Image (cartoon, rainbow, N blue to C red):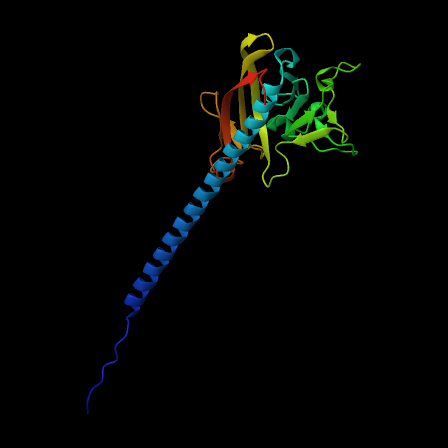
Length: 241
């Protein structure tokens, strides 16, 4: 009788093969998740940079069409902490009004009283950064009670420059300083910080000078979906569009 031998895998060999496949699958999954996070972060940064450039182009055109005597100083109204405020600039024919990111996320009665809204409903939504065609410069003049107007009626020709997107963006800060003036012509330096607007996802760096996203391992950290960027530009005044 011929003896036949059955060939197969031993239990040890099978265990090693399964362990190897498990490690390989885990490595592939880890790389895939890392690539996905990098894509999300890159896409968020790209969107912020594009929004910042589009915003800068709009501001540049409106300043160019204004004259030095028609530009009001940047007006801010505090909603509590230093970074929680509403702001406005009147350029003669155009007015910009906005709420800082911190003000939009605040819930105190003081914050709500200075928040700029748009619409004529009972509870109009807060604006991020509104451009209003308003030759009367009425939004930069206090009313009889000593307050600046905080509502943009629906009858106004107004656009929220950061509204209508799939992400929530807002200004964290904005400043403007005249550099040179000559009659109705001149130049301003405008600096602004724009970012995603999820409450509690940003913090200042250790020096206390710059805003940055919190790491994922911190409370409320959402680094992959968070982005902030600062922009600085020189705009001309009193030219032609």
